[in-house]
Length: 75
Image (cartoon, rainbow, N blue to C red; front, side):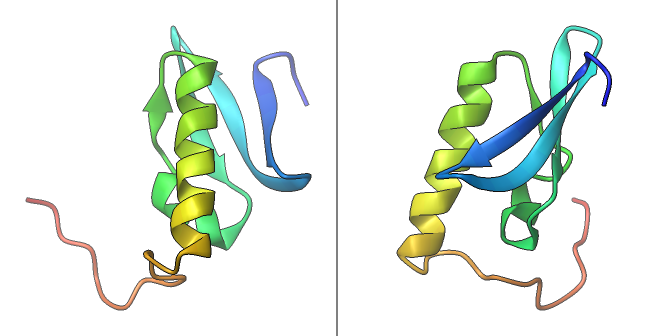
C-alpha cells in the first residue's frame, strides 16, 4: 500500500480505503454495506470519518438497504 492510500476503519471493522487523488481522497468500499459511499470524494479526513460513522448508524437503525434492488440511473 502506498503513502497515498489510507484504511477506513469503523469500530475495528475495515470498511474501505481512501485513495489520494490530487487535493482530495476517493473512498473505495471494502465492505459491501458501505458501497453507497463508494466513489465519493472528500477534501478533509474529518468528512470521511463523519460519513462512515453516519453510515454505520444508519445501517444499525436499518435505514439503508444492504443491497441495491435495481439499476441506478443518472439524472
